[in-house]
Length: 355
Image 1 (cartoon, rainbow, N blue to C red):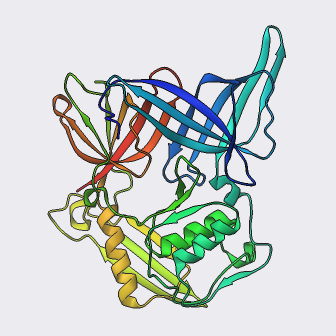
Image 2: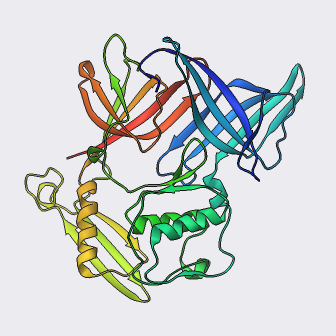
Image 3: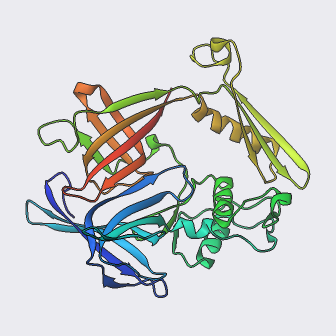
């Protein structure tokens, strides 16, 4: 395995991927160096990209896969798939000395967002929520990788009823609804376009996949922006579970005088509300409210750093040790922009919740 702490020469490879077989069938040689890939947690489609090309461009319904081919100073090599995308809107300029254009690319989750259940689709009580989400994705022709889960629906859940049903507006939203019920984060895609479904765990409970360490061999720029966001801090959480006309509501209160954002400290309530289309006992509702309060009463710390590419994506944890900037600890990657130019530079937004 390559040592990403070493300097490397970056080359990029653009492959056409057959939608029918899922196999790479052609190397695209008219893509111009440059462009970028963006990823962000909390957005429906998660990722997208922009590229430039020379001449004409038409690959029909097939996909584009972008690779970084890195050659390190010790002679080792490694190839990383940076993303697999749908070609959304090619634009072409002809004349005036120009012959080429630009490509706007969407992540493969757009395929789930573009389709819906054409009639009511019901999942009975006792259905494994994550396995049902996997089936929906697989039926749309996408590969899935998921953490096994034993969470079962407590009541029938129906999608595809339209506005009158008050349910998900497309299959992507339906999938994420099922994942949320099971305590998973919203789905995202990896470099090969595989849909990932993973449990929602705090950064403190996960191992770091990469490090940003100050020193002569540092792989990040000294100018780092740090922000503390207190706007979403709440001291009361209300959780409602509704199914077949029955509603169970759970509450959690931060009444700790030692907490700077508690009800006694602020002298007022700041309430966050959550709703789930699922049956639950009172104990489950109260437990979920307490779980959400643990995050809601924390301050969001964000660090924006520019760095040489490391093989981490949004949702991964990185360790930062920047002594002269007084920034230490493990952070989750919340947002990235990767430049497909010399050096493969990236800008990442790292975040952590702090009490």
